[in-house]
Amino acid sequence: MYAIFLSLLISFSVFTYADDIGYESPYIYDSPALNDLAYAKYLAPKSNTQDLIALQTSVKSQKSRGTCTMFTAMGLLEHILIRDHSYPRDIDFSEEWMEYIIMSSKTTEGSSISKNLKAVHKYGVVYESTLPYIGKRWRELSDSPLAMSRCGEFSGTRLQSCLLGHRDPYLLRMSDEQVLSLGDAEFVTIRDEATALKEEIVSKILPLKKSYKIKKLSKVKELLQKNQSVIMGIKLFYGSWNHSKTDKLNIQTRNKKKWYEGIVTYPEVGSFDRRISMEKGGGHSLILVGYDDEKVIHSKMKMEDGTWREFTYKGVYYFKNSWGVRGSGRDFTLDGESFPGYGMISQKYAHEFGSFYAIPSK
Image 1 (cartoon, rainbow, N blue to C red):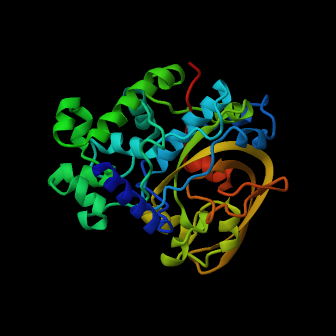
Image 2 (cartoon, one colour):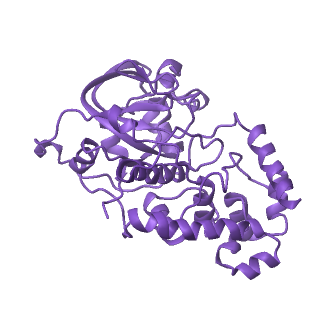
């Protein structure tokens, strides 16, 4: 009966907030990769993006939580299994578990890719069907009946971690007997699956490293050419994305057409976007699925001197996002084929403000 009650609460939470989309997490700076592309003459001018898209799982939505790095970490693991181990494209790991194990030792949202992958190496993964994602962000106990049920007895840092991770953070380091004494038999089942999949899957594809960061841009494109996806962490400049905060922060008039087409340009020096988003913008994480050095995109930006200027950028990266398929990238197309939830970002933006990560072959 208790399990049925919790299931109903989860379903209620997801249904009620299905359209409550949050697009960012706190920005965690990491130094950019060395731009050595001028010396990488062996690289082709474009990669086979559609081939790499075919090696991805479906586009998902992080909804109102700042969990983009959880989605890219799980998405990259799923991609590696599809690419190298012939797993089906519907394989689906739980971002809820990923967020829980990270937030068990934190009291603020946000994480890094290297930290996430090291946590997966230590604690394993579980399937989405075992621990479904809850899209509602819990800021306080009154935000959800499930929040009150799972976190209502706690205070201080334990409460904050519980609200962020949607479960008592102390459970992770308790014995099964201790967990059962608290009445959460479901968690024991979840952790058992994580341990089993750690041995069955994670140990075979994820080597333990101090950092999974890519140091040179040539390596990023080299991997994409080989049909291996790369994660990019990046500073959000709202005007360049034509994000809803473009209007809310009075950066400039938002171009919703580019938002739906998934076209991300560049925050020009001297623009309102550059200054305001630098001060107030969060961070985001994406899975790169290709590049095209010849692709040209255009933007129009409002400058701080009151003028509007038009800009042209040559060279883009293509990416898979975690904002669902109804907003950014809803109308994204590539060579006449529709790929909702994907997009393109200027290489100028990516090279200046992005950091790149990959899982090395084991």
